[in-house]
Amino acid sequence: MPLQRVQPIFLFGFGGVGRAVLRQLVAARPMHAQRLGLRLEIMGIADSRHILVNPNGLPTDALQRLHDIKVTTGALFDESAPFGMSPHSRAYQQLEGGVDALANPQSPSDFVLPQGTIIVDTTASEAGVPLLLRCRYNGWRAVLANKLPLAGSLDWWYEIATPFNRWETTCGSAMPVISTLNTLLNAGDDVQRIEGSLSGTLAYLASQLEVGVPFGVAVREAKRLGYTEPDPRQDLSGRDAARKALIMARMLGYQLDMDGVSIESLYPSSMESLTADEFLVAVDALDDDMARRAVELSSGGRKLRYAAVIADGRCGVQLIGADATTKLGAVNASDSIVVFTTRHFNSNPLAVSGRGAGQDVTAMGVLGDVMSLAM
Image (cartoon, rainbow, N blue to C red):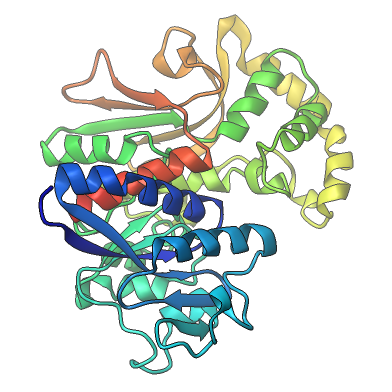
């Protein structure tokens, strides 16, 4: 077995995706050691409230206990005595304040990430942006599953979207959307148009509308199946799909922010003031309008899609009727797809499709990004 090179990792976020990354990383260690002579060493984990670090790496048994404690209690550790040790054990540092404290340290001595550390951001928050902005100046690199920093300020984009970082899973889970687009751009191809179905939730709702299921019924069923956020309006607003589209548009050089993205919400702004439970009742009032829209867009055998379209300096997400003979129209409603029309892929555009959501699939994509930087 070759000598192992150690790559320090810091997990930024310990929700479902973060924990799946941990599980997959630990499980892959024997393979990494055998094939690559590499060990990914998790030196610290931060959630929204706490940070736990060990400069020498968190032992595997400690990682398992952290995982189990987080699942059962929602906390990163038992504040009174993590792992049965004194909170002041020299082997571990505990810092209050979680991601915010790490992103905005009060003192440089609080905790210092060594050069070469790969920061893995699986949060859904902008709290870590200050840390990400310091990456290139401190010898760190970043892997993002978090869309918010890349779809935020253009100033953030120019600092974070560099060749030293990776963000594959922001636009399609483990589907190779970002790497494919980078390949096209780096090879000098002219990417003229990108279109895609980027939200599994909205793809499901479109498929239900297409076969005549009332909109309110479809929304409630999507929530029951776990396809939506706890408040379905987070999906129905279209903003999550818009962020994915904006990231790809910015990769094309479009000088856009979220205000410049055309977004069709599937509910009116008058429903914003309702609670989530109230919305799930009131959504039935949209049935007739959505049914009429579905019939119009799917006439002539077209397929109903909630699609992103990026072309000619513009970017938008909306319900469309896609010709059934096109790649966007032919894809299974349960799958995500991104279609690239370029100078070289013109009459037969290049498509990337497959499962575009899920914690384990996203974690696999994150780990793939980590490995591309570690190698």
